[in-house]
Length: 266
Image (cartoon, rainbow, N blue to C red; front, side):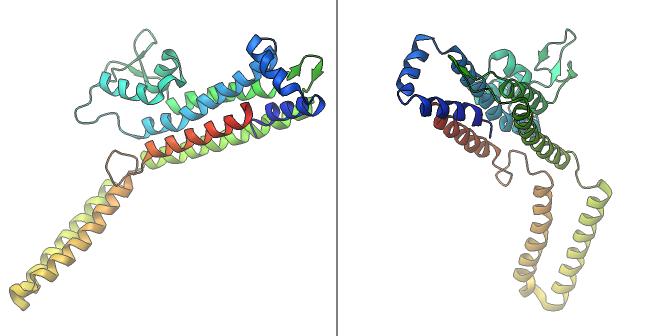
């Protein structure tokens, strides 16, 4: 729905002037159709920030500390993931959560002050671009394809609803990250499980002898595996192989957004 005004305006131009597509391309090369170029630029900026959103969520959900990674190394790796989508200044606001005493983003989490949640920085910027896109003029020479005020309000409301869905999804993942199993519950469960297995193994060996060991091994492996799987599912956003592949999800989203943009500009 976001690309609808630009797409409809292009169809409107081509419908009333069949030769407008070639002429429009020439005007864009010559810098004549500034309004259409500005509309496309707004759309591209929105797409860039929308592509960065899953990357920012991934960085926020995964723990900052990783073996062998210093603060500078972690920042460089995350900056490489964002690439040319954002400027260095915007990238620092998206990647770094802490500010120094002068109010500037810093990689030192020990000396800095927690100042921002990077996914919220991205969503706030998307709200700004959504407003600009909804209230753009969409003027082409003497033709005006500007929506009515009611149309602008409806379009902006639809975009806001989609962004609010992203807010809700991010909030749900943040709650999963920040809500581990209660400590007393985990200790009680593991203690009872180990005690149960210990007594069962002792009784089985005393009654059936050493022949029962293979069966006991399988039973212990099954029950302890269930407990280990519960621990893995408790925080599914870390770097372990059993956790969610957030990087691949970000790549798929970026490709889908790029495909949608190609449908508009070609």
